[in-house]
Length: 281
Image 1 (cartoon, rainbow, N blue to C red):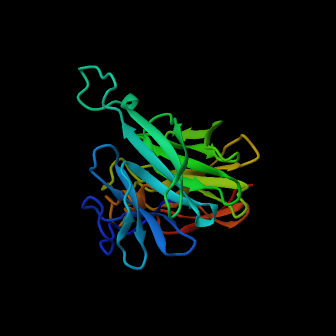
Image 2 (image 1 turned 90 degrees about the vertical axis):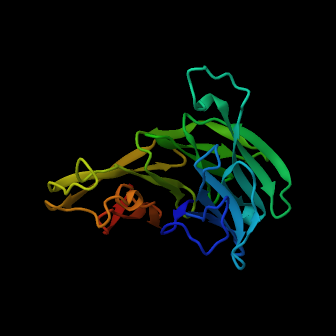
C-alpha cells in the first residue's frame, strides 16, 4: 500500500532525476523496497522501481511500470504496467493522447529471477494506475486507479495460477483523494479513505467561517459480501481556522489511509492533526 514520504527523499538514488515520494512495499527480508516517484516520463504521473535498502541504490528499474508489490511471501512480484499505443486512431482535433490510446497490464514475476509466469490486460473505468495492494490471505489484490475527479479499485485473482480480473467487484467514487485500500489482519475486511478537497472554505488560503464540515469518507467492505459501505467523516473547526500550510494538499485535503486496530475498527489521522477511531460495524 502506498505510504507517502514527507516530500521527495533525496537519500535514495533518483529515478529519471526524481527522488522517491512514496513507499509501495517492503520485501519480507527487509532487504528490498519498492517505491514510487512522480515522473515526467511521458505516459504516467507515477513510476516505480525497487531499491536495495542497505545501499539505497536502484536494483531493478522496469520500463513503463506504475506500481510493484511482493506476494507469495516475497517469492513473487505483481507489477502494474502502462503501455501507450501510438497506432491508435486519434481525431486530429485532439492534441494530447486520449484514454483509448493507453493499455494497462498486471504481470506476475518470480523474485529475484524476474521470470514472467503470467500477465493480464486489465480494464479500469478511467484514469491511470497508482497502486496494487495484495490480500494478506487470499490470492487476490486490489488495483488502485485515479483520475482528475474520480478514483477507485478493481480486483484481480491468481487462485488457479493464472491472473484474471474479477468482474463486478470494483468500486468508483467522485473523489480522487484516495488513500489505501488496506485489509484487516485476516483479509476479511477492506477499507479506504477519500478526502473532500478544500473542505474548510471556498479557497485554500481563505480562513474558515467555522462550524461542522464534511472532510471525506471511509469506504469499507466485508470481502464475503458484494456491498460497499460508506461512513462520512465530519469535524468542527472555529471561525478563522486555517491549515498551517494551506497549499499542502496531501495533508489538508486527504484523510490518512485507515489503519486497522481491530478486525472491525480503523484509526485515521484527520487534517486537523487529530486521530479518530471509527467502528465499521
